[in-house]
Image (cartoon, rainbow, N blue to C red; front, side, top):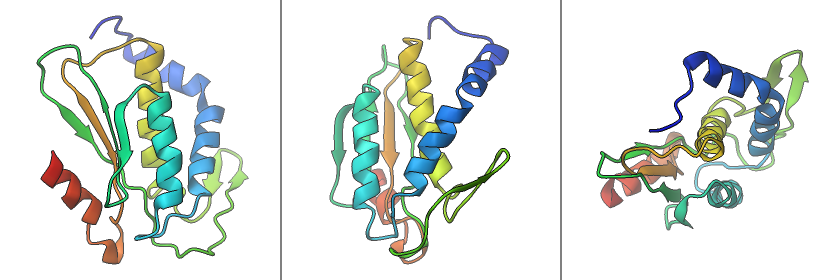
Length: 160
């Protein structure tokens, strides 16, 4: 990698964007994504993957969102895979409520924030023009919760 920042500079970069990060987390949380019905959230994440420069972005047959950020060389590939789905059925009130610095809503942390974190990691890499030594494979998986039986991760592992 080039142009490496110190850990304090990286923390400051994220802290300076906290309101934007929380707004993205809110947007993701409020898109219904019960297991076996993640398509609406998958479309949102696919658009964000494309925006952050991932290549070959697609929503696969398992409803996973997949994109690859090419590395700069022959280093090992890294797969990051937060899950898209929630245990909450369609029709659940997903409105995010804020009290001080805390957000409350079904799925706001599990796992909307995992998806948000991946997106903002990609934004950091893009903004700082950082390339990893190998490819970064991003898979926002579907079907992680309950009866989803890890269908998205299983499909990703067969593919990669």
